[in-house]
Amino acid sequence: MMAVGILLLSLAALLQFFASYCRSLIAASSKQALSPEVKDVTGLTKGASGEDFARVIQLLHLCPERPEDRSSVQAIAAYFRMISFLRATLARVVPSIRAWTEFERAQCAYFAAVALDRRIAFSRDMLAQQMDT
Amino acid sequence: MPGPLGYTIWFLGALLEVSVVVCAIARHSLRRYLFLNLYMAASFLVSVGRYQILNHFGLKSTEYTYFYFYSDVLLTICLYFALINLYVHVFDEMKVATMVRRTAVLLLAGTAIFSYFVVEQSSGRILTHFVIELSQNLYFVGLVLTYLLWGAILKLRETRTRLIQLVLSLGVYFSVFAATLALGNLYPNLQLVWGYLAPLFGCLLPLSWAYAFWNHPEESRLSTASLAVIPR
View 1 (tube, rainbow over the protein chains, first blue to last red):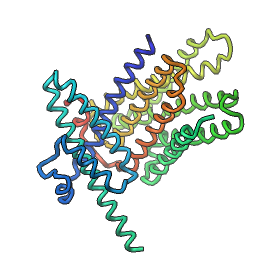
View 2: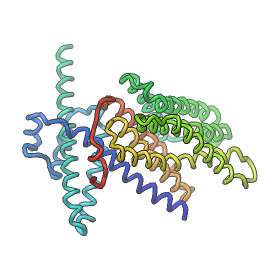
View 3: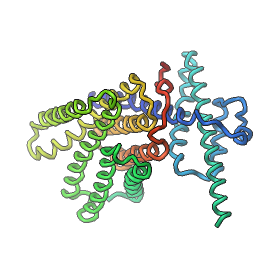
View 4: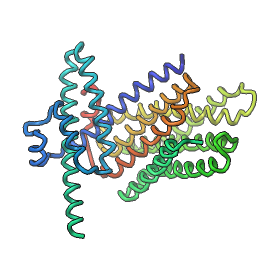
């Protein structure tokens, strides 16, 4: 009984810490403006929405990985799935959650677009280095 | 003996532990977050030691069992002080570092006394039982303290990105481990939990700390209002 209680409390704490951690990753990248070419490629000319996330992630997978952002992209993808699950379940019963989940999903899409921007710049740098040598 | 997957996770964990210290040195933050880095360095050394003993004596040997549990309690105490170090950073402007450290030592002593009373009735090997009990209790104390620290960060509107991410990573790590320990108590024969999941989750902390040191300079700031899951 005690172990079940500890398990439930730990899982509740885990969810809260994980959500806050992902929001800290998103907040750190939200200040960065997207380059015009990434806006064009991703179609995020009028801001991001949750529906863009899958497409931006697909584009992200086409670029060579930056070791620095691999773990954060995975964390945000897990957070996006969590929020989408909430949207598909709880948000149907509590409509006020719907707007919040949509905002969070849009933030995740913007984070992915910023990561894409960084990967493109990284690939360009690598190419320039290869050309020099 | 652990299988190839077990060794891979182990090796990855040790590599990530070193990478935290390397990232901290590269970003000139070794002294600022000394206890965090000491914990990571100690974790790496313990990993090397465990590997050596495992190779010499085997997984089921008494030597490996003793080394595993005794080193685990030392690492948990190191992690506890790393957490206290984060408290000192958060309450930096209040000039209460000495009080925080004294309270931390008292809390550690209290946890040790509580653990002793829990295992006092054991028939034999009381020290070994005490070490295991203390380690588990410190994880729960760590989880509660990290939760309180997160509350203080939100209340004090702490804005240092790196510090916030270090604390949140620690919160994720403690809660995952507390859940794993509880799961282990519920299902003691679940080898998947002890063999693979626990070491895999153990990689999360060095990974996120290395990320925080590498990607966010000490000057980087963010608004805590955007971090609370329930908007403030």
